[in-house]
Amino acid sequence: MVRVIQLIVDNTSGVLSRISGLFSRRGYNIESITAGITADPRYTRITIVTSGDENILEQIEKQVGKLIDVRDIRVLEPAESVYRELVLIKVKVGEDKRQALVTVCDVFRAKIIDITTDSMIIELTGTQSKINAFIEMLSDYEILEIARTGIAGLRRGSEGVVNLND
Image (cartoon, rainbow, N blue to C red; front, side, top):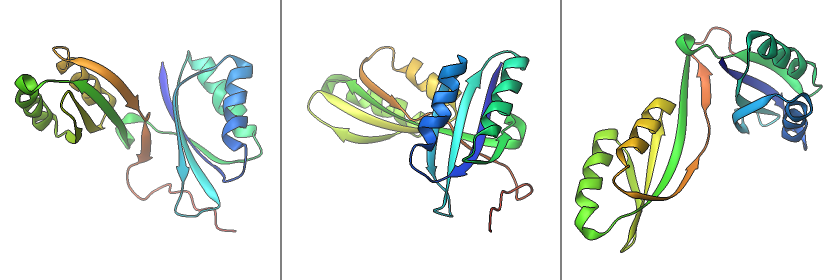
């Protein structure tokens, strides 16, 4: 099973290291992890995609919740949340195949953000399945490099918004 967990943590030095260290010590898997400051600069939002059986996922939630810097922990259920990921893909492409690649990019609403004589860098934001489908469509091209951010997510609606005002 795969689970998306959202943490609100104190924006302090070493917090990400302590969280990833817990996963490492316990042998838990992190498929992706993203972190960024919230609207309140005292706090950071961390989104972790992890996997395991139900018992392992429950243990992960309990162990992470015990960390001193963690202010809130929530599971982002797919039906109640919005997930997005950003990918940058550098593709080797000559002038003869460039227009075909532009067409594929248009279908996926991807942006071409850099062009050289022999390559293009493409930016795409979307769900993991959209990004995976786009990468599959590039099978006729030589992918030189890929940089993926991992999932960022938020729960839908205004109910359950975490407010940590002191």
